[in-house]
Length: 87
Image (cartoon, rainbow, N blue to C red; front, side, top):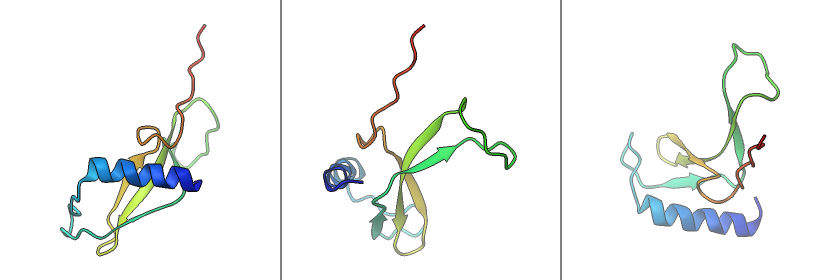
């Protein structure tokens, strides 16, 4: 992510997260990835290209227990949603 996107993400998380502790261990030590990853539907181990939605996610990991929460990068304003084809 570019620096402006990282700053935008931190602003989003500060607004929404509001210091919530980890639901597993109750620690409040979070680490935010500076990359966007893809979450795809599982097809029995086969890679399917096209036809299935891909969700852009940003992992946020608890520094104490490793619990990882995914933040939707579209909702956070980091990735623009794909425009649907109108027929």
